Image (cartoon, rainbow, N blue to C red; front, side, top):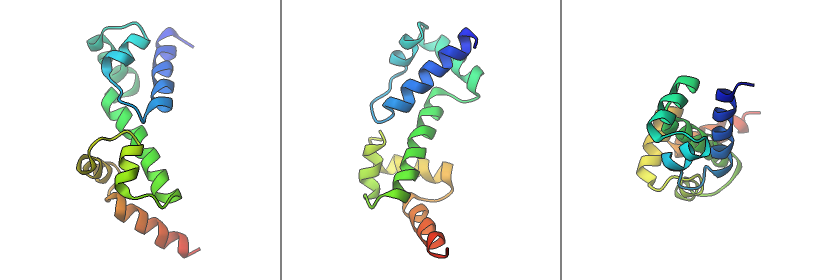
Length: 115
């Protein structure tokens, strides 16, 4: 594994473990010994997405799983997954998943009950 791959993997593993927390660019770039701007370019080149997009995708993946596996409210899930604003969470969820969190849960329940 190359040094570049190890750097990306190290940051991804950190995000996967700490997605509920406030994740700042300075913290992530320090993990791999790079400046903020160099790290931002590096991460985008290696992954095809910005660090913000990656963090959002990880958080929304966890949120989708919680919508399916729990009875927690949407706002509880929002905060549990590291978002700090429910309307922003709803907007991002709908943009990436194609429907609002509430609709996502309802569609899953409907399809699940068909089997």
